[in-house]
Image (cartoon, rainbow, N blue to C red; front, side, top):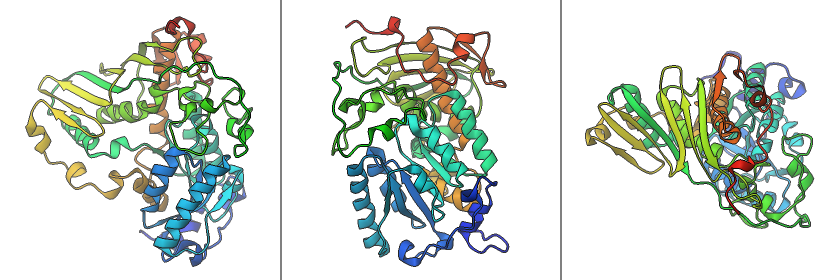
Length: 452
């Protein structure tokens, strides 16, 4: 790691590199004792707090961060006490065995208590979508660097705010999306950027079909382990308060796919959830992940009116860019495809196809000799925290990519072709749509609902 002149320790450098936003951003942090961090000295170790310990965090984010030798998870927050307890066991068992750490991971119920700690450098936010932007902004203003689960926002105005706060506070921000670090995505990027496909004639980004409908659900008693008021964040998050029902939150004492991912109150569904993988990768390959489309149109289908789950079942969205490039973004199966007048390629999470096998043998440093940060979103984040250099997917990328998904959902929901002014970040001659730029879509368009 590059040492800074007159640096007392890495943690003080990280904190002081941010602009002044209260004592948490400017106060000199305590040196964390070796009993907490194990063998690695504090000057080389990023101390991490987890906010949200659900399925994605438990099975992906915790183990992937734990495998990094310069990261220690020392605190967490969750409003579900069972999930917090299970995560603590997982973390403590690993830290005792691997790092010989005597002190266990601390549990907080209020994420603001975690953010107020001076011994935490960064946070991994893995909450439901409606909390993402709120917590990320609070964390950066508290002097913490942020890795944020995708999709990072529910409204376009939230995206611009993330960019502004990250810059104002001098904080590292990273979209925690693993698709573009995969070898197939990296190969697709190199091939598209090389120009060997010739003039691009069609571009496709495809994601799996949406969720199944669900019969109407009765109101239910809130489980004793869940603080449902805090989970919803009424008055703080953009989610309108609704009564508790199991299939609107997450399984009790289990890790199955949560119901909130199928509910417009909290999530836009596949259009953002997988779009921030596949459309993200497509825009990156084209060099458009920091640019805006100029025209958006689309069609789609929601479940029947009596379905409790109500995110889009299917959609077909079309984007047009100022350069003339057009992208078809639709539900099918997960892949991105680039067709040029000299050949085509198709890449997914676990497959790569091409019109000419020679393309799979082309040599690229990003494919054959990548730096570790380009093969792991966790490694990328930690290296950015330590170096203070931007992550591979900073706030501007998160804003542009997720907002492009949201514009597609908005075009489908309204049943209109939208014209977008990227410089002003507003729609042209469309007051109704502009009024929705700071409001999430929480109800389907009844005209687009399937027959019951």
